[in-house]
Image (cartoon, rainbow, N blue to C red; front, side, top):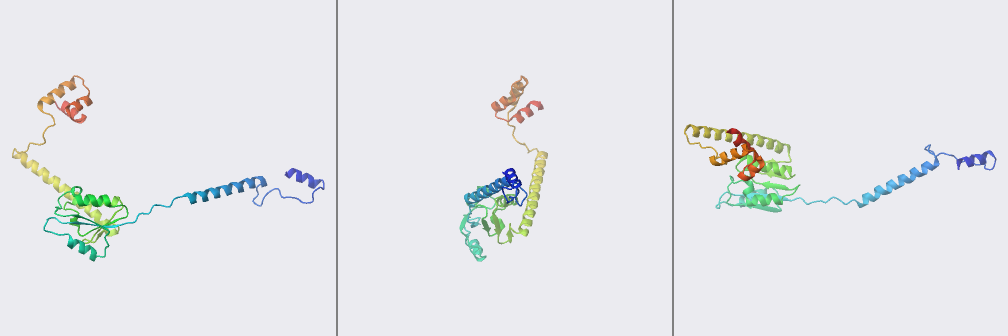
Amino acid sequence: MNWLRRNNVQRGRCNTVYPSKTPLGLPKGVAKYVAQWLFMLHYRNATLLQRKQPPTIYMTSVISYLRVSTKDQTVQNQRQAIAAAGWKITKEFTDEATSGTTAAKSRAGWSACTQYLREGDTLVVYALDRLGRSTIDVLTQINTLSERGIRLVILMQGFDTQTPAGKLALTMFAGFAEFENGIRKERQQEGITRARKEGKYQGRKPKLTDEMQIELKRRYDAGENRSELARQFGVDRVTVHRYCKQS
């Protein structure tokens, strides 16, 4: 319509000159569509915000774990110490008459505790040895809790996985666990060496008897499939390869 207005002005039929562009420098038709597009975009975003569901918020809990090694002992002292430290426990798990040398996953109370814990919860333990006597096992449990986002507090040692000191202690525990594992392997190797010198070391029993090894080698040389031989003899393919190549 701009060309019509210009012609009318030139012929004296119209005294008013309408601007052909908006203050933004856009033609009026383009500006109209831009305004409509911006309005639709704003309406769409507002609708999405209204439809968006609020995040689910879980209430965090403070859980305690208590353990005693013998039937003569009681967990009452641990319970009182945790309460005296100001912790309000919402749920408690115990292992009574359970040795610390027992693997954590084999303890009924600890297994139930770890299944109950959720991200953001806090687990309070009286002392580090209540988690176990094996450094490697204890460190494994601590790492598992940390990876799940569960805070661990140990009263006697002043250990808290949410503090820098607690994280440093966790690194030190990892070093001790690696050291303990190395010492165990070294002692095991020394025992094997001594048993060999005394003629007592028999080693691990072979998976196949001498007759089975001969039959396996014969069938393998005949061209039978390695996977099929492994299935029939009840071993893996690597074992089949090792028996057939060593003779």
